[in-house]
Image 1: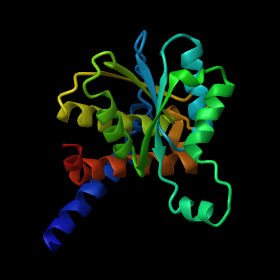
Image 2: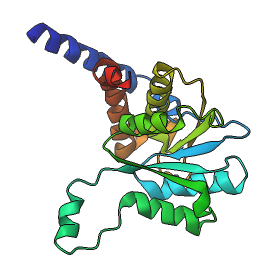
Image 3: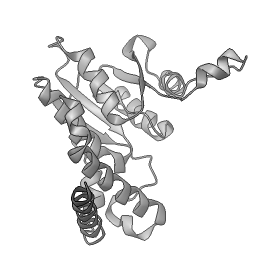
Length: 211
């Protein structure tokens, strides 16, 4: 066990040093690959205002026919409701914002779940599109720093399920993250380091859950 911890610590150190020493890390994370047309976008949860704006632009430009959102976990929000508090879930706020920006409710698919991570979202989308050959081109919409890891996770999950889908990526241009000079801002440095550590964690620990 001790040797394993040392090995994982070494891998983490190598990852951190590689990221710090590579100015292109931010650009790699902010992967952009938008197909001419997609069957649906997948709006990943997180700081949703910048992501919803990006998704609305894609829809209004005719790039995608609709949008999929997986309900994210909000912890014990049911306890708040049980005590009389009115709670509007973050996922519902994202849906309502998209509708206000011109996306019809009929084009938005809300998947049930209690997603705590991007992997949970990928698994929910996998289950939804399985057996639906008409959904073979997706565009992931997220924040720039989150884009690369999201692509790796979705590609892995769908591949392991035998789903041959094209996965596009569209990082939000409304984000304050600057991929080409991420080392100049503390928040961007934290985002890049965090994402690379999460990628290492996915490859070592979480990948087995994708099967």
